[in-house]
Image (cartoon, rainbow, N blue to C red; front, side, top):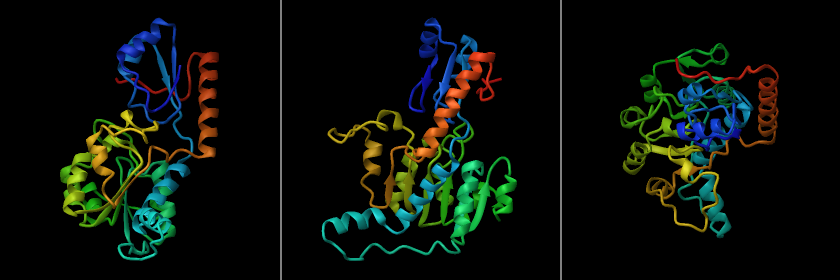
Length: 285
């Protein structure tokens, strides 16, 4: 069975799949926090994924959010369509010489670093493992506390694990510069949304760009334009003029979709031929 990031494969679902003869779950994504890996292992279902498809797609979307928030593109677009060409409230800042903190310096984080270096930014990084590619680009590795305190822009590119769940919580937000920008294109639950809302309300957080949301399973990938949004937290976020939310589309480029399809089919073929796969997601020890 082939599934995506918004499909929940808990123990009951996996058990039912096993009863129908399913031996392989092929994820069309890199993340796997939507799968009960322990249950899959016990039941005898192998889980494979697409570990990398286009780091450029997500990184470029990250920078698009940074630029749009900084230069108020979303607000300017809406104004001009109504015939309002005034500049009040649209002032941004030069990215040149600003400090960008990259939390998670894997493939996507490295591409973000390369792009932001082109803007002339100072680059800070935080990760459990340093990436030599990022070091070569001039990323200076520091503690998370130091990164939050010094960065004008904080961008998140880490997987969701028990250690990164609500990595950006009340205390982390408090450590950020007043007026800083926060971007999350990784996993929704890396950010404590309610803590971020409080920081936006009091003005401590300058702006927020999200492509993911910790409760996105109830709304993302659906057209709710003719419905009342039942998620009060998401609805509150959408009221802020300094917040941009996109519906988990950072990965969504032609090149990335082709790579996802090719790798998924390759994973299935390899498993069918050998009973194993290079891209198996290991279960918990």
